[in-house]
Length: 141
Image 1: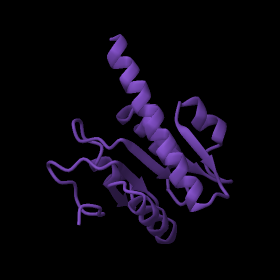
Image 2: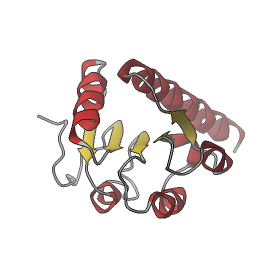
Image 3: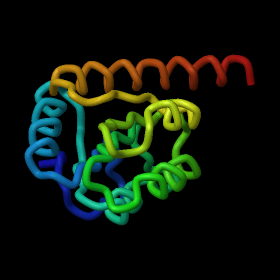
Image 4: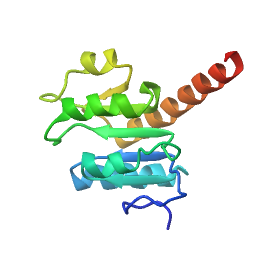
């Protein structure tokens, strides 16, 4: 099975790498994304997610749930150095990094409470906008 939470393969480039510390949201989001046809790798720590953000094998989208992360601001700062902002979707809630700060970094943001369907729709939309941005850059540059 290609959609997994195992160590990165040398040739597998997933559509989405998901970081969520809590197993229930991670499992539900991952299952629905797979059901919608996306290749998904799920991780439980920033260190594991970072291993999947290597040059040449980066996913089309990094999906990060800030809830429960020990240093959400540090994760966002590092993520901004590793991924193009239009290829990042952040789930936020009360008590985590304010949504306005995340938007200023150029990331897509979803504020809790949200449904799994809303997460999947936002992920698909973020990937479409990322593809459009990449295609327009390719045509111009």
